[in-house]
Image 1: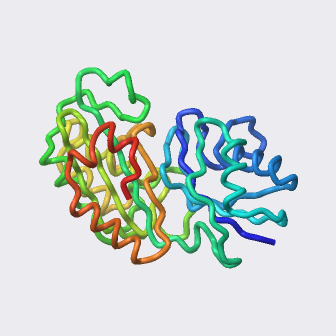
Image 2: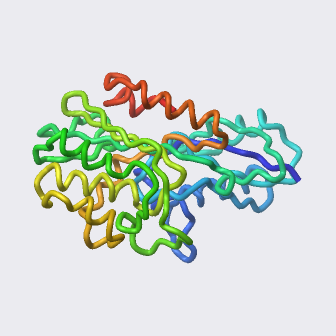
Length: 277
């Protein structure tokens, strides 16, 4: 029995999230992956991902693993798998992993990117990868408010309802906001993220910076751990799972990349369609 580690990218627009939903005829990333791998390898396949993404959320660097008794090389698998996959999922890397590798349990960090547009009208090309904020946003306020999330905190006030977790404590190593004209990008690197955590962090900070919520809303939600104290959940279409880290060296490189980042490299269409981390 061989275990393979697979890194994929997908456009989340046409999926009802990553996780297969039992008893529901909904198109999910996991459902497509398992169906195509099962046909390809002629045996039932179950995939185990680094994390779940919600409906409409995209990924450039989602990771999953699976086991197979089929005698196939990593090179042969990636070639055949991509021929079986639909256009909105691409396998970027396939490697044979150690038997003890686990895509979720061994991850030491993740990077998320959130892309926002504040112009009057969304651009026709690429609009499906941008959240749209129609109110004026105070950039200084937005950055200052979001910066409160850095460090180790009890993030229950930014966790989506229905989440199952043993603890709400998470550490965010970096939270950075970049802007180039009407294009904005927010990047967060941390040891883990709760359900809808990034979207709730961004949405609450936007509510303050755009004047929908009073000053201190973000801080109160962070301190109280109560979701009702926070603001809106930012739209799914702006969110990307950029990368999953499995060792401290690559995590450090990601942090350095973000620290040295320039708006022209990290914001707008170029950043949306480029593997940055």
